[in-house]
Amino acid sequence: MPDQWQQYIHTWVEKDELLQATLSQPRRKDGSIASKTIVRAVLLKNVLHFQFEYHVDNKVLHENVDKSLTSSKLVSLIEENYRQVLFKTRQEEVQLLLSKKGKAAMRSQKAAGKVQQTDLQHNRQKQRVLEEGTAVPFLVELGIMAPDGTVRAKKQDKYRQINRFLEMVSDILPALPADRPLTIVDFGCGKSYLTFALYHLLAVQQGREISIIGLDLKADVIAFCSELARKLGYDKLKFLVGDIADYEELQCADMVVTLHACDTATDAALAKAVRWGASVIMSVPCCQHELFRQIENEALSPLLSHGLLKERFSALATDAARGQLLEVAGYKVQMLEFIDAEHTPKNIMIRATRSQRQGKASAQWQEYLRYKELLHITPALEKMLFEDVKSEMDE
Ligand SMILES: C[S@@+](CC[C@H](N)C(=O)[O-])C[C@H]1O[C@@H](n2cnc3c(N)ncnc32)[C@H](O)[C@@H]1O
Image (tube, rainbow, N blue to C red; front, side, top):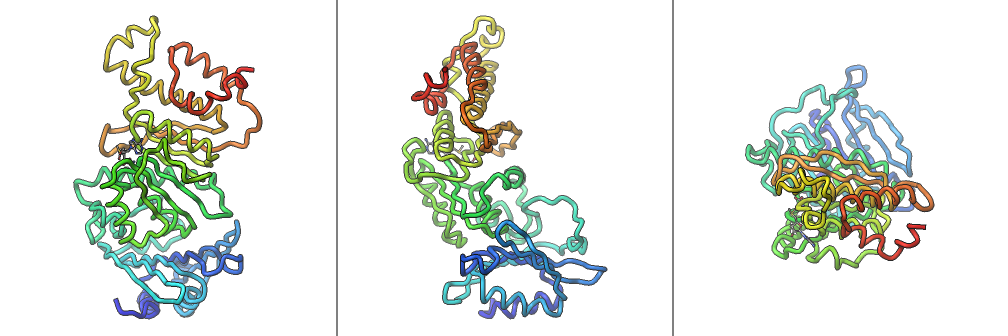
C-alpha cells in the first residue's frame, strides 16, 4: 500500500472498483458534521453514480453525485471530517484509520471473485450481513475465512451462526438509543467470535459510536481477544477477566449480550442488564442445571421420571421463568431459535427489549407465582431481581 490513500480512492473510482465507503468517527461532535456518511455506487438510468448518505441527528439525507466529481468530494470529506473509513471494492475490503494529526494507517484484505453488476442496483436481494467473497478482517484472523474471502469448509457452521446473530441484532437496532454513543457488554464472551462480529457490524460497517466490553473468567482467552482487538485496530473493544456476578465497573449499559454462559451465570448477566436498564438483552442460555434439582410435581411424573426428558423440560422451564421475570421487570420478550455451532444443533435465544410500560407488572407477577408454585421452583433470577421487593409485588 503506498502512503497516499487519496490516490487509492481516485483509482478505485476511476476504474469502477469502489462499491461502498463508510465514513465514521467524526472529528467534531458538535453536530456540524454528519455523525456518519455512507457512499454507495448506484446505477441511475444505467449510469454509474455515487450516492452520499449523510446521517445527521436522527435524519438520513441523500445526495447523488456524478462519478467524475466523486473522488475529490470523497477525499475532502474524509480529510476534513472523519477518522475511520471502511472501503468495499470489487477485490478487497480496506480499513483506513486517520489520527488526530491526519497520519494514515490502511489495512486490506483481499476478496475472492468479482462482485456482480447487480450489486449496484437499488433493489438488491436480501444478503447476509457478512457476505462470502469479501474478506472481513476479523473473520480472517479468527480462521473462519481464508484471506481471499472464502469461508473455510470446517467453519461453515460458525459462519452461519455469526450471520444469524448479526441478523438478530440488526432487527432490534431501532430499540437502541440513536442520539448518543452505545455501551454494550458481552458476559461470558469466550473466544468472542460474536463480540468481534458485533463490533464489526456496529462500529466498522455502520460507523456507530460504541464501546463493547467482553468479560470472561478465562485469563488466557481474554489475553487472546485483547491482542486480536489491538491488531484489528478495534480500539473501543475491551476485554476483561472476571466473574459476571462480581462485575461492578459500569452504572448502566445499553445492550447486554450473554451467549452460552453456563447455568446461573446467565441469570447474573440478566440481573445486571435489568439493573442497568439496558434497552436490549440478547441471551442464549445453556447448561440450565439449577431447576433440574428443584422441579417437583407428581402429576408430571411420566415426564420427570426420565432423566433425559427431565433435563430438557428443566431447561425449557428455566427459560420460561427467565422470560416471565424479564416481562415483570418491564421487558418485551421474544424466544427465538438460534443456531449453536458448537453445542447442540439449535437452541433458544431470549431477546428482550425494554418497554415503555409504567408502574407495576402485577398480572405478570401473579402469573409467575402460579407457575413457580406448579413446579415448586425458586429460580436464581427471581432471587436476584425481586428478593427485596417481593412483598411490594404481592400487594
Ligand atoms: C460456552 S462458552 C461461550 C462463549 C461465547 N459467548 C460464545 O457463545 O461463543 C461460555 C463462556 O462463559 C464463561 N463463563 C461461565 N461462567 C462465567 C462467569 N460466572 N463469569 C464470567 N464468564 C463466565 C466461560 O469461561 C466460557 O468462556
